[in-house]
Length: 215
Image (cartoon, rainbow, N blue to C red; front, side):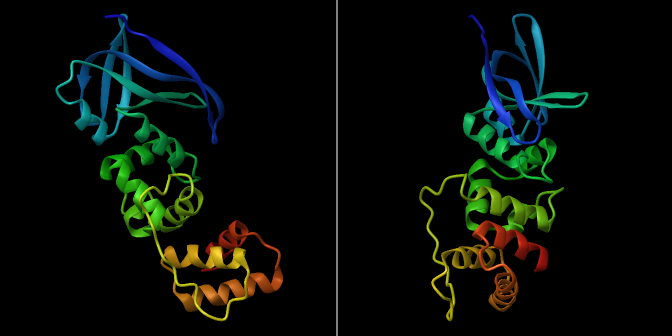
């Protein structure tokens, strides 16, 4: 059996551009719920993994592990995933300020990839902040930044936009997002009135960011 290490260039929004391994395939020498060692051509690669990757690989003697190559100052680590989908969610999570690789790995250990995706899309703040290391503000930030990036297949939601709103799409989008995050209608309306009175030309993203600081 011939093993290959394939190189790819991926943009990491926190640490700029990296030369990054796409995957490492080889013999699984060690496997624990937190890490594994893969032997490729006599080199043992230590790879940090989530519980769901551990579950997917149990019993396997060889495999292909998709890699996220984390480089920060003197720190250089491999995070590994049994499939590309989990790696894609991990990469999005670490792009959010306040969520580092270890916290993202913890999230993907406490929740499945689908559960993380659904929590982001539906604005389930409580589920996201139930993960150790993620507070309310970080959970809110993750939802705002990622809900449109994780895919909405099979998901539909109806949001009551209330009454008395002029046809301002930015305001409506911001209102809907903030209600989804769990804020009360009265509080959201008050904050939106304050923001738009001062800065009526704000985009929905700007409105939401300003509102999260005031709510």
